[in-house]
Length: 124
Image (cartoon, rainbow, N blue to C red):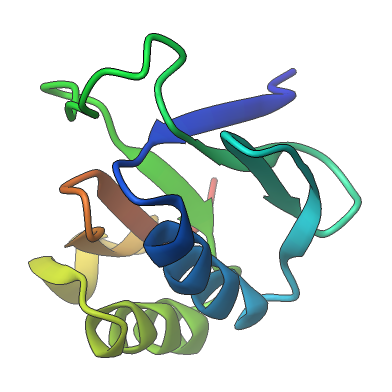
């Protein structure tokens, strides 16, 4: 259903270092890219792209926008959260159960202020 989402960044080299190291924790890598946009994934399903805005203006975070990355299990949620903080992200909600028995997540703001969620969801 979703092919890819883009996250606006102000400094491509800094964002590449952050997302390259962070997504490597779950088998992600840069799959393709051009000067102003880089696509990350694992070769299956949706991709996450980082980009300098097309109009070359400053990147702005959308109010209410968030990018959720399926970590698969609680240990990986904690691992991604810790890695993001190590790479300079800001805490926006420590790992924990948000919906008992159904949703475990952690939240950070990347180097440009974009909100990310690492989660494990159990349906039913």
